[in-house]
Length: 150
Image 1 (cartoon, rainbow, N blue to C red):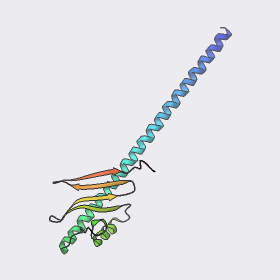
Image 2: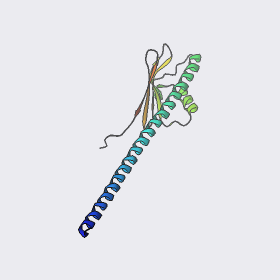
Image 3: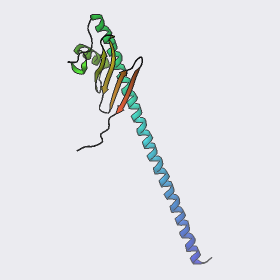
Image 4: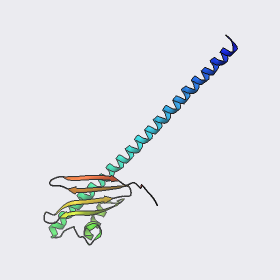
């Protein structure tokens, strides 16, 4: 074997090793990016489920207070108060729920049937909305993202 063939063979071996290392690096980077994306999506989804659970607990507490106020001949809906909820009812729900991260308000109330037809729970990152249709209620969880800053 000639010396030029030997040098050429060593150069080809170095190129092959470099290509293999480059492929490994690209594959590892792609896996890390994919795993980060999946983890981020899982975190968003699980936090959204947590906020939905908190909003449903708030609605249950409001329904319980609504029943108590109905027995007293009063309504929990008062559009002049914070969150469109009578002051005592709002404080009662806050006390039952403990430390809430956000605020809640009634967006709809059927006075004749005395049922909650709309509720909104807003935190720093999510807004949870409840609307009552004919028979069933619909829950929507929206992620708040800042898109532009001027």
